[in-house]
Length: 337
Image (cartoon, rainbow, N blue to C red; front, side):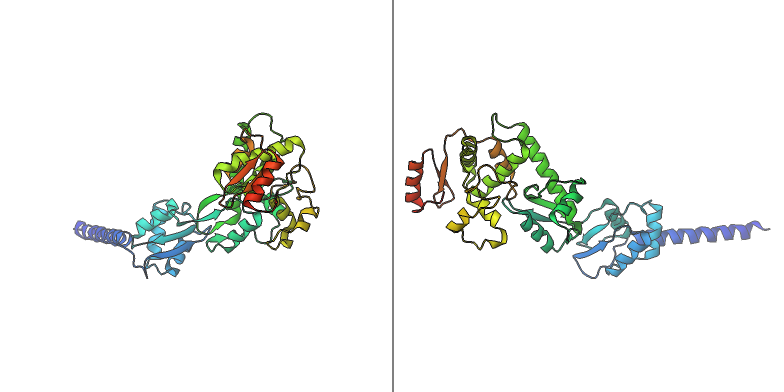
């Protein structure tokens, strides 16, 4: 006599469970309402499922927080959600959204570091980028390098130690992480070029090659001229001649340089004045690219000691001072080097 009520109760319970499952399936499978498309939103580091649900709701995504939390826990996603910036181009379901968050399918952007830039220019570009988290503001170059290398006594100067390139990154990435990537890339490039260097070069170590590469970067207007520019400076080093390169003088002037290099600047001594001092300057003067690194370590087989710009980006190379003066008279009218 009691079997029928029990059967009815079980049937009711089953119906309720099936209804709940149907509701849950519909809730996690139906496209979520978005206030607009594309929609960008951020997930903060360390956010749990409930906090993520609040951030999604704050962004205008019509998601049921309880359903999202249950879905995340059921799928084991509670500790798998990746922080970062995301974008939705069209409505997607809660299940698809959770998968996107656990994959870390963040929006990407990029920043470009140009060959020949100084570290000051690189840091200014990072500071002005709206999609970068600015963790290095207020740090000196020495403190910045210490954070990147982890060394208690990092290299004395950070100039030239970062590789120029286009760096893609998820929005809200740290500028410190980007600089660390550029530093590792330059270390790798320099090591590879040093290992394959030509014989009998006048460099004591890879750092001196990096210094030379930075000068070549600033002195070259055409890629094809890099090995010849390198040859001129390598030949001068071998002979003990001063390098007499304007970009080092300009770097030594720092903020005092107003865009016009004067004769008195060439005779005013600084550690970077290669007219008044022989040999390489104490540090790189800019950020050399891979081509300049290669040229510094594979100079052309040439006896040239002089060069002058034609005015079209290329240069004329000479082995004697008389030939050089003739080229200067033809192309620049006044001796500049």
